[in-house]
Each structure stands twice: as C-alpha cells, then as structure tokens.
Amino acid sequence: MAISSGIPRGFNPHYYDMVVVGAGCAGSVCARRIAEVLGFHIAVFERQGHVAGLAYDYLRDDGSLIQPYGSRVYQSKSERVFSFLSRFTSWCKSKQSAAEETRQPYQPKNGYTALFERMLNHDLIDVFCNVDACQLVSIHETYTSLLGQPFGGELVYTGALDELFAFDEGKLYFESTLEHAFYTKLESNSRDLYNRYLERVGDIINFHPVGRLAEYCYYDMDAEIESALELSDELITCHVK
Image (cartoon, rainbow, N blue to C red; front, side, top):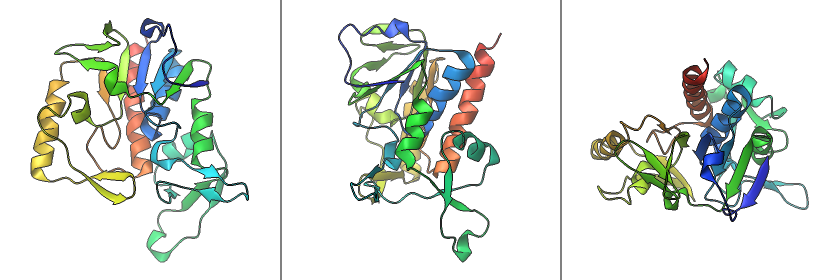
C-alpha cells in the first residue's frame, strides 16, 4: 500500500481498474477484497488526512488510545464479518453489560486505525488522503468521469449522494449525535430526496453506493462491513469468468 497526501502530478486514472471514494469501513473492505480476489489496481480517495473514517484513533505518548470521533466498540453479530476483520487484528474483549449478552463487544488490540491500515496494505491499493473526490468525480446520465475523462472502471462510492450533485435537489439531513459523527435520520421527506438522487445514478452500471452515508441508512460497524462484503461478492461474480 502507498499512502500519499493529495493527487500526485501525472496521476493517470486509467491505470486503475477501480476507484473507491472513502477509506472508512465500507471503502476499505471493498478495496481489499477486490484487490486480492480480482487483482484490480485500486485508487482510494479519502477526504480526511487519515484512514478508518469515524473509527479513526491514535495513541498518545503515554500509550492511551484517543478516539476523536467518539468511542467505538465492535460488537460481533456476523461470523463472516468477524472472521474477515480478524485477519487484520487481534482482539481485546471489552466489559459486557447485561444488555449486551447476545453480542460480545470487542476492541482491536492496537486500535481501529491500525486495523484498517493493515486491511489497505496491499500492493495493488494506493490511498490518496486529503482528496475531496467530489471535486474529481462527475456524474453523467449513463457514465462517470474522473478528472474530466470518462472512467470505465468500477467506482465504489461511500459518501453522501447529494454532494455529488452539489445539493441541486436539496440537502440530505444527517443527525449529529456525537461531534463530527453523523447518522441518518430516516424521515419520509429525506428518504424521498435520497431516492431521487439514487435514481439519477441508477443507469450507471459501474457506480456502486455502499455504506452508511451512500445508502442513507443507519448502520453499526458490523452491518456496514457486511454490506460492503455483499457488494464485493456481486462485483467479484460479475468479473470472474
């Protein structure tokens, strides 16, 4: 894996078989699976200066773990998701409350950022941080373009759909429950607005929205990763001859 800041001079979008917008849970999972199963060269664009999305954390000098976007505890419900994540981390069990008896909570031993860095650590994956993909990707009726050129590869998008269209039909509402952490509030008018945006990308066969923001759906981490694994299955099926 190569991680860089910004788009390098001479960047050639046609070098890549897939572009992934977002290096959070859903984007990282799709990038890893498609790289290792299909052998695609993949560019991951991340708006922030780090990977892992809202799960981003880091260690202080004293060894304490800081989670700037709010505390995260992974609760295992899907054996497939847990097995996939366990390839990239070992786990520490968290204290379990009576309300969590059916779902054992875990924490990755060295934090979530380390987990997703390992997931993205593949020779065929390049990660470009501090890149706002909405400034690079254009949506047309039947195709996408990247840096002003039609893009024939797969495009996995994990951001909010309204941003791609400069909010021209209105802005989707995201309720903030923690500082910088946004969750969808599924009001009927918001769902109708989302569906209008979704319809506008419905005829683009290589455009794939996935994850909490792109699907306008509240997901915990377990469910978001499962959705990304399912999308990866579909893409793999389409491309395996």
